[in-house]
Amino acid sequence: MKEKEHPLPFSKYQILAIIILALTQFSVVLDFMVMSPLGDLIMKNMKIRPGEFGLVVSCYAFSAGISGFLTASIADKFDRKKLLLFFYAGFIIGTLLCGLATSYWFLVSARIVTGIFGGVISSISLAIVADIFALNQRGRVMGFLQMGFGMSQILGIPISLFLATIWNWQAPFYLIVGLATIIFTLSFFILKPIVSHLSLQRDNPIKHMWQTIANRDYRIGFLATAFMSLGGYLMMPWGSSFSVNNVGISQKDLPLMFMIVGISTICVMPIIGKLSDSFNKYSIFVGSSILMVVSVLIYTNLGHVSFSILVIVNMIMMAGIMARMIPSQALATSIPAAKDRGAFMSINASLQQMAGGIAALVGGAIVQQKNQFSPLEHFDTLGFVVIAVILINIFFTYRVYQLIQKRA
Image 1 (tube, rainbow, N blue to C red):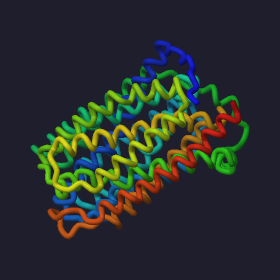
Image 2: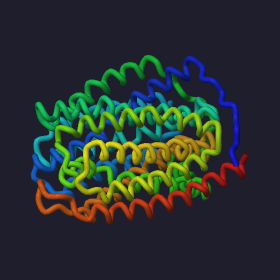
Image 3: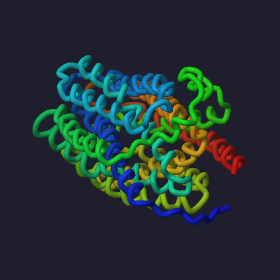
Image 4: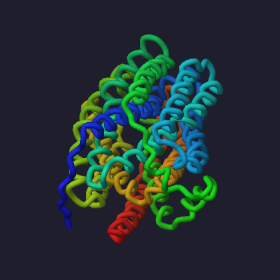
């Protein structure tokens, strides 16, 4: 049954906060997302196989996961603005090291550093959202934050790939460093201190973290988020290589494809956000999941098709992926009590990243490639694994929805 509500309007400061958080998300998402379109270039440049590239992707996720667990013990002990700025500064340094990487293991090390700092930023942003926005505002906020994903495809990835083509694959990381430095400065001057949660703290940090993990209701949310992450990470690292080596499009066509898909994504996100605030969030989530199942089944079984067909399939699949994330994250922010939000979001992001790291390794083990120019093998098998993960995720998200309904 649809649940019609009346979303609250945003204040001027809330609008500024959304812009800052969206820009922050944009830079962090771009840093991660650019690895997929650069994947084919990096594998050919460094002469590595899908399994080795999977390690480059997963080491970011694992380091982000470990960092999230460590941060969970202190996340509710500090001003959230200061915490955001500290980790964002570390993210900028890690991204710079990626640009300076000249060897495979240098790149792996740089991704670990970037993951330690960048992987926590999303959880801090979500805690800030839960602190300064009401529940029936959060769907729209999530929609705007996820627009960073679309913007990274419209502007970030095409420009990054263009720079990588005319210069080298490290160039996009220098672009991100320059952009992130500007965003850091804006965040420093615009965001207000967020300290209302500090008065609610009574336990020591370690005890607080373990109490958060031990909470049965919270664990349901953790499982839902982990399975949400598994689906995306299983396929994402191999997108550019599959498009070039299996579907047969040119490397030069990749920027245009990502731009078109990004434009469609950024148009969809605000609509999904508004629907999530106005109607049943779980129903929106299930419908989006079904859309993703169908599109994944088609995408992973594509042969040599035209550029336009590949773009259309990617548009539908990306709409399903992002439309699942908005109601899912909006529901997740409603699970923890105010005093536990920072710890919950940090652990949640940590499990999400570690699940993604496992998925990247599993994907690298399933997908095979005889040489850097041959087609990827067993990509269709990977698609069936993704579909199974989506179905499990529907169940756990229903448990989250039941929990929130019971409280209401």
